[in-house]
Image (tube, rainbow, N blue to C red; front, side):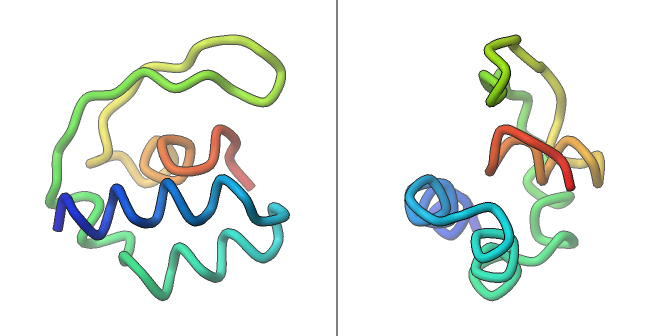
Length: 69
């Protein structure tokens, strides 16, 4: 699962937001992200740093994209 997570982060980095969320869902599910239970720090689009754990629904999406919905 960690490989799928890393692949999703790399691919989604280059896609527009609306498309990247659909691609992420095809690569790794929210449930798989929760099972990873990884702590992370991610720089947001606005420049601030967010830290969280992928077991949280909102934090998982943020860890991949740098934003949430």
